[in-house]
Image (tube, rainbow, N blue to C red):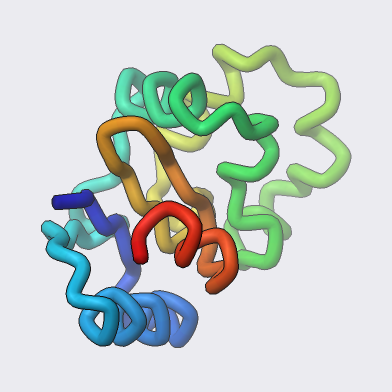
Length: 117
């Protein structure tokens, strides 16, 4: 059983959900805008993922661009970045898949097959 954090209107999230269903992966779905990840969750996800924190940002999203984060992120501490991500679920890269020993950001079929299939 994995936690699938998604924005249901997102076409990538819809494709990812179809992939999970097709591969019979059990998951609990969570709406990223209605129940955004907390700072504590984001820290735990980041540590478990072994990914750079920047991979948790939805760099193609409107919120990211509106806040000018491309230029601001390099000067921010990790704590500031966690706090910022926790303020708006739409800043978070989606979908997020959280398992016992891994966290996946975005939908990359090859990566998902490695961890979920």
